[in-house]
Each structure stands twice: as C-alpha cells, then as structure tokens.
Image (cartoon, rainbow, N blue to C red; front, side, top):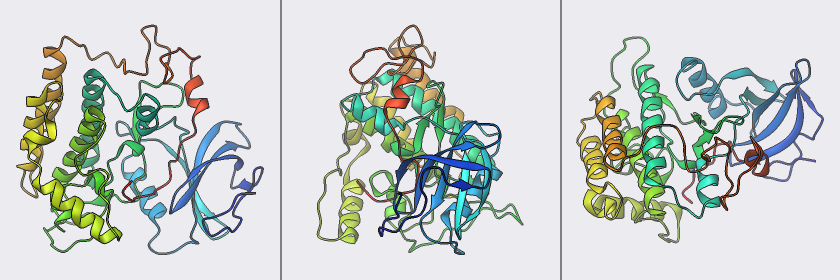
Amino acid sequence: MLFDNRGKNIMKNGDIVGNYKIVLELGRGSFGIVYEVKDVNKKKIYAMKMEISKENTNSQLKNEYAAYRTLAGCFGIPKVYAFGVHQKRYYLVLDRLGVSLQSIFEKRGKCFSIKTICLIGKKIIQCLKEIHEKGKLYRDMKPENILVDYSDSKQLYLVDFGMSKDYLDPSTNEHIPLINNKKLTGTARYASVNTHAGLEQSRRDDLENLGYVLVYFAQGTLPWVGIQAPTGKEKYRMIAKKKASVSNEVLCQGITGEKYFIRYFKYVKGLKFNDEPDYKFLISIFDKILHKYKYTDDSRYDWICVDGSESSADGKKTKKGGIWKRFKDILSGCHSEK
C-alpha cells in the first residue's frame, strides 16, 4: 500500500490510472508522489507525478503541465505524454528519467571535476536560454532538479516546473513589472540575492541560481549551508544576510578557474531586471576554462568511463543503465532548504 504524507492510502502497485499501470513508487515530496508506470497498451515505461492534495485552482502540477506544453521540443526538457485527474488528484505522465545530479554528487563523495562542472554549466545555460526564449522563468534551479537520461547519461534534463512563471505577458508580449515584497519562491540555498530581498524574479535570477549550483559542485558546500535557526523564516533571513555579505571573490575562492567564475557572477549580478542575458558570453566563460586546462567538450562527465559506460560512486564500471537501476530518485516538488 502507498500512503500520502498524512498516512492515507492513495495508490497501490498494479492500480490503473488512465492508460497506465502503477509499477512502483520512485519517491515523494511535500506536494506529490512519483511512480514508475507502464503503458498498458505499448508496455513502455514512464514516470507519473501525482499530487497529494485533491484538485485545486492553485495546483502546481497544472502549472507544470502548462509549462511543459509551452516548452515542448526545447533542449533539456522532458516530453509529456498525458495529463488528467484520477480520484480528484491531478497526475502528469512524462519521460522516465534517471537520477539527479544531487544523487550522483553525493554518491561520488561530493566531488565533481572542473571539466564536468563546465559541461553542466554550458548545457544548463543553453536550456535556460530556450526556456527564456519561450517567455518562461524556471525559478527553482537546484541539483535535485537536474536529471540524467535513463538510458543515455550524457543527456541532462531540467524537471519540476511547478514554480515556473511567465515573464512576458502572453497578451502584450511585454516584460512583467518589477514588484517588491514578493515571497521567496524556489529553494533558499540557491536563490538569488534579489529573490531573498523580495524582488520579482526575472531571467537574471535563473542564471544566478545556476551559478550557486555550480559553486556547490566545485566546493562541496556554500557559505550559508548549515545555518541553524529556531524558525524557517529566521533561517531564510540569516541565509539572505550571509549570501548578500559574501563577495564574488570569497564565494569562488579556490575553485579551478576561479577568475572565470567571478566573471560569471559579476555579469549576472550586474544585469538589470528586464535585461536580456548574453547567453553566448556566459557559455564562452566555461569554454575558456575548458580550453585553459586542455579539456574538450565531449560530454564525458565524471560518471562516464572512457569507453562510454557509466561508472558507479566507487569508480567501478556498470552495465549500460545499471547505475540508474541501483538508485531511485525523487522527481516531485519539495522546495525547502536542506
């Protein structure tokens, strides 16, 4: 039996939802549960996200489905196959992907090479570029939301668009206005300084979020990780204060290619609210690091062996796709600071 966060049974293995049969639970978060499902006709495997709360007008899954429809065909965006309501709960069926970069990072002892970090940076900037070109903001960049393909671990995907938002008015195509006193949206650890300050998010914030993720991969931590406080509100306030006080130089100190990371942050933090970022310039920053240290952009991440097979946390080879079968991942939306 499978239960929601209040101990109530929602689904069990073998249940049918639309044209899909529940195979097993992959994970759960505050807002939903993710299952591996099989198409009863084609016998293909997919992932299904189902909200814990019964259908409501503020459904994050409805927002996520709308985002996937807008972003269909964009680089690094999974394909959606079905959306509907089952037992008064919204569900979404999409590509069955592999594990998150957070899972891989932890299994490897929180250590990625500078080459891998640069390759990740380039891929995700390109993904954000295409998201932004469709008039959308991502607003929840974090390692848990960057997944590898289930069968080809050279491919990266962004998932969980429940927090996404239009930054261009669909009717006028004009940029949304700058608004103060906004609540924090996303994950506090990787949120931009302006987001902590209560400012409306724009394209610059997605890129600043990514910068913190890349520094986390390079350093294994961030200066504000581990802050303790009696309440969540006070913790967010302390994270915001610490983040605003840390200079780009201190943040990036000791990273291979340090000056290039500093250049990245100076650029994205210098953008005005409605500025269009120069994505080509940002990608070139990571190309320069690769060139300086004599690496090539061959999509061979740390988890890819020389012969193209995957490697596990201990560096041993696994069969194609084997590492992904060993680790199950949570794709559902849990947006709290860890």
